[in-house]
Amino acid sequence: MMEKSKLFIISSFLLMLALIATIIILYLISITSISPLNLIPPEYIYEFVKIIPGPIYTDVLILLVLPFLVGGFYILIAPNLVGALFRVNKLTYLFRKPPQYGIFDKGTKIKFHTYVYRSVIVGLFTFGTSALLVQFYGANLFRASDPLSGIPEALLRAEGIFFGCFFLTFISLAIFMPIWILEDSGLIEYHLYKGNRKTPVIEGIHKFYSNILEVYSGFSTFYAYYSVITQTFTAINPGDPALLTPIILMMLPLILTGFYALPLFIYEKKLIKIQSKIHIHLGKHSIRKIILPSFEELKLAEDR
Image 1 (cartoon, rainbow, N blue to C red):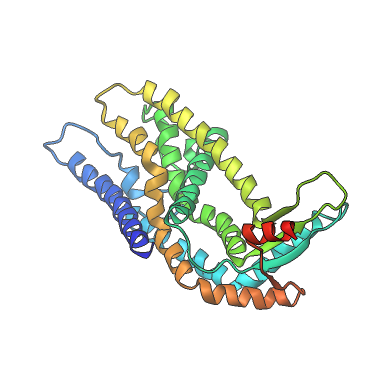
Image 2 (image 1 turned 90 degrees about the horizontal axis):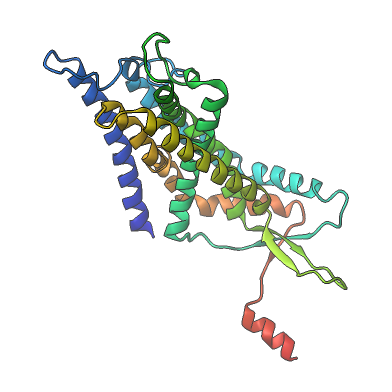
């Protein structure tokens, strides 16, 4: 998995840099006297993400640094973070029978598809959230534009989603990373309903949080793609250079992984120490490690 992860990180990072470089190159071509096309608006270079001060160069640098700060902060507070999420989980059982809690030692290995899924789900969440914000608050929330420029509204919205995705990336990572830390801690809840026709449940307490985020990500992403396909593509003539914006938008959730794939890789490298600190902290709440029996052991118990 390690080599695949490295390849994924390098590919994501290079793809993201290639997108930024393409924007700059197309703008340089646009301002030459021999170019009849306005390939890239000046705001893409001099403003880029409207909310972040400075041109594209400083904006990209800031957007690359912020995920590292988010990851470092959560690694630092991981034990207290898991403790807080555990207490929130307990509050949901104020009016019903609480489960038993334990720590299932999951180890530190992670399958490659899980690593990719964690990276891509942040991109999808970002993409969908950006589309919803642009829908409710307008493209100018993220996109610096001249209201008299004559740019079609559909294209302005697409560009607003584009810049919104860049700005929201580190915020989305800040939302998802606590759930991953909680999942990797191995903290589980066990429900046994004696005398009731209910199936026993053993699951990580992260599922309560991750289910909400995953459902939201799915619906918001569907809306974002539907919006881009039905509104933007139909509003731009074939052969128009502006068509490049919605095309890039379709691939943007994958491209965005270049901003946080490396911080996630560093997190995986430090996971052993993080887990150790979390387990010590949970021990203060009288939560101990448990060993779940294999299916074969359950069958033996049935035979007895």
